Image (cartoon, rainbow, N blue to C red; front, side, top):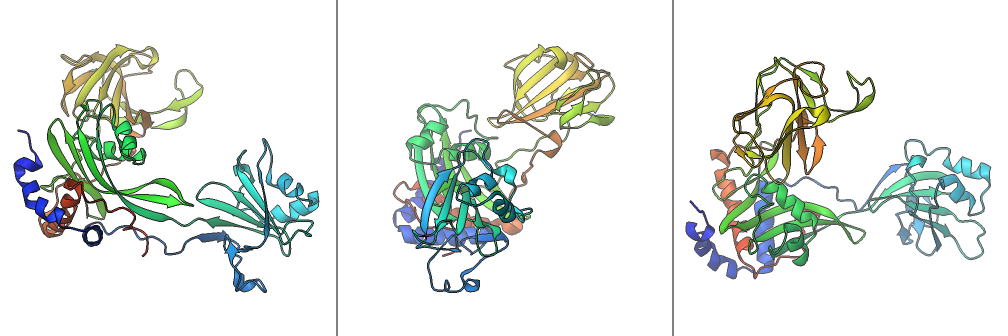
Length: 445
């Protein structure tokens, strides 16, 4: 039966409340609700942090009252920027500013543990800082490693190297989008960070087939985006989502219990479904996930991006979760193989099978625990076993380390806290008139 917020009477219950809520009140209420529910990860109040030797204005004479760049360099110093050339190293960059080879070695002599010279990237920016026009050589050099981290080299007066980590800014955002071609394009057209599409696919992976979205499907999302140096550095957290697919509304409400944050529907049921721990009853694990394993037949080192389960020939192999068979074939070294797509995030492969299960062929839906084949030694194999592989967004991951967020519903003792969260998040999601952008729940105010 189709479930909808309209059918459940939720929109009528929250609609009046939503229209009367101002942006300020909405942000404050959401902050309180999330503090009660998620215990948002503590973040450092400092704008930046240092590692290695620290240099501050207090221990540099005459600089205590000056404006400083990177917490160290006087703002009135003259800047001279350049780009790291191909195969260029830090010592040669320093030498280009007029320092001798021995001086460059002395400057970089104590960088171990603070800076790895091998991490210098061609094309990255570096900046020399001179005290004034008459200075023949700079006093400092900054190497910008990425948007999160720079390395500061004090070139004169007791040379030293230390790093500078840029502060984080968090912005609360609200977007609403409609599917025309894909979720990625819909997020982009709505002005959101396209990484949000990946996050939504993760949250709704067990409830929505994102390969089967229809034009007209739509979504509302309240989320937090992190910025460094004025540029976006990803999605910090989704604080709530409402996705309408095929006429069915699906809420995603974040809630924390057992020290883990998961996403739940309006009734407190987890949006996540659990995989089986293993696809068969096995004797032992004969080989694990590795990027460099000695192949037992070829006798060369090559990646083994799965787990080998040793078991007698003919042992039933089952699907670890609901899904659709995408392929049944004989693939050279893999032998007889069944591939299953479980959702838009996860897929699995079952290799070296003796034979396929009854009715198993491409396009057939399968249930968790359904037999899809039998252990064998087809392909390149030394004996009967199952080579089992898991893919996340198409990339192989270790089946024994697949993340497993909570699948239990909100417990009775937590229902009151969950209700507080829902009472605040739902109005924000269903009311297109409220767009609480700019404030932050995660950064210190």
